[in-house]
Length: 321
Image: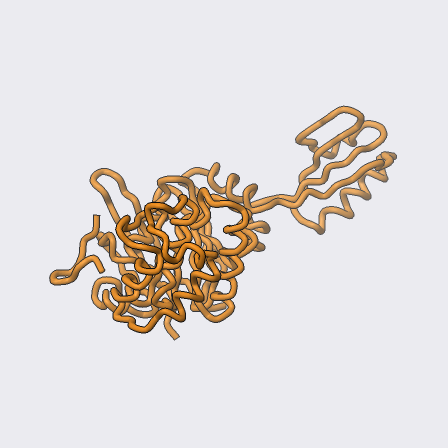
């Protein structure tokens, strides 16, 4: 079974800017995959290469086994992309927009699926509204619907909840989870790291066009971050400890390499005659990990510990669609 997305040594340069620098990754069918990075890291450029909106200078990219250059029609049919920008045709209603999108992929009598998409994205009441009359959040819902209208096996969401309300965000993720459970591969880019932490099984982090981390969240925590133990004790902290943060009233913040360090640390405190009056184990979240990895700079080593299986430059004679 081919990977949903297979990227091998992809590089892309825009003038003096190296947007992608020998990027390689494999995303298995059915994964919920996170693609994170600061602005300008290369996330949208990579998505553009997969979608056929930009042509890589070197390397290969495949969607469901179809090369995005050699078999571009099949690759594009297998992919649905929710773009970061709000792009829409102001002359059509929501339903007309989705019917036209269906037509791009040769789909007729697709109204039942369109109705289901609109219902799940709370667009039914706006089906006959002109696109110009919609709020920004509603327009973003239509972009999501457009990406799903041809039932692609691979769905890429590029900042899908930017600037939308909490209700839409919850409804969208409920629907996307259902699609993922039904076998669709989901690739998410987001600056809301709590979304990636809650949804994604594996996460890749890009910086300056290179992958600087690629692993499951659990492995990222283990390899890139330490636990913190906040304690309040009576007496002075024994000299064998290095406290990073000393507050008033005997408050201290200790660094632990892992959970196995907790009991030996408490034993040392007891041996020193300290009475522990308060204790809290602070577990890192994805934001802590992200900030730590980004601070390491461009010289950090790429991690690929968890493999997936354990404008436009278009081909001659083809249009954008």
